[in-house]
Length: 140
Image 1 (cartoon, rainbow, N blue to C red):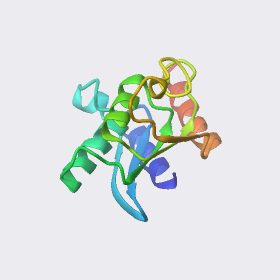
Image 2 (image 1 turned 180 degrees about the horizontal axis):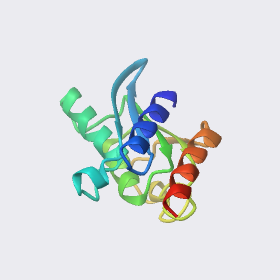
Image 3 (image 1 turned 90 degrees about the vertical axis):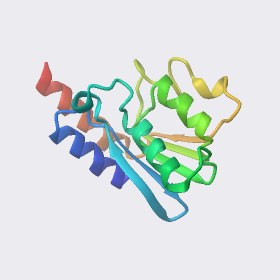
């Protein structure tokens, strides 16, 4: 999760919502990414989506069933659906997102998907939450 937090801090510095993600295959970090929605004018450029795309290209497959995803914020419904389609083995996320989350909140995508990764929420929750809180305090 510390690598994902480092990515979230990069997003913060680029005036992006500070969310970072990394894909691991065993002990190997395959890819790391952060939100680029504003930078790319692409509403799908969430950290998770970018990480899944890059990992799939590196491994040459759309099935990431031997991989784990670490992300600093509970994935939204779009990202949760992509995680299910990619067949991610385990999802670890930091801060819970009662308004926009799609895993434990909102759509609860994995309750309705064929593939259901193991989910562990609240990993480094305080650090992940504080980064988001600080970011949005500056913008209000």
